[in-house]
Image 1: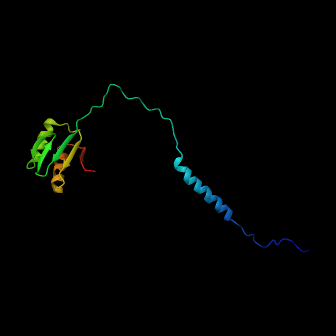
Image 2: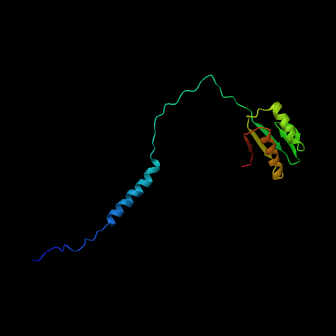
Image 3: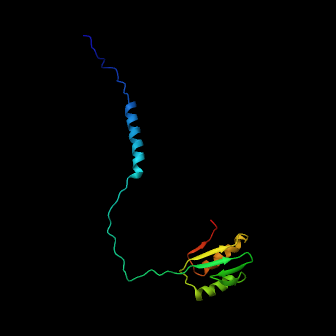
Length: 133
């Protein structure tokens, strides 16, 4: 009997169309995924209306090229600044307010960092350096 089909031969699988379809689906998924937004409604507690957030005036420290330091328009000398600032801050400033330090470009980096260190030692936690950017 002559068989029309050879049962011992292994069929050749052509998976190229399957790979093409999967790559197209992957490309579609990569384009759409960043645009999918999941939103869940959350009931947040209401804050107390009696407590108001108080605004603290920032402290501006300016150092000019001659080594003269101005704190909110009051003049200080570079020599002994750490002690003078600590006394001045404990008497006149709130240690929770933010401090902005501006220095002349020609000053040495160490001078600015020493002023920054004195401000940190006086108890201020929000200290930033101003730039011309």
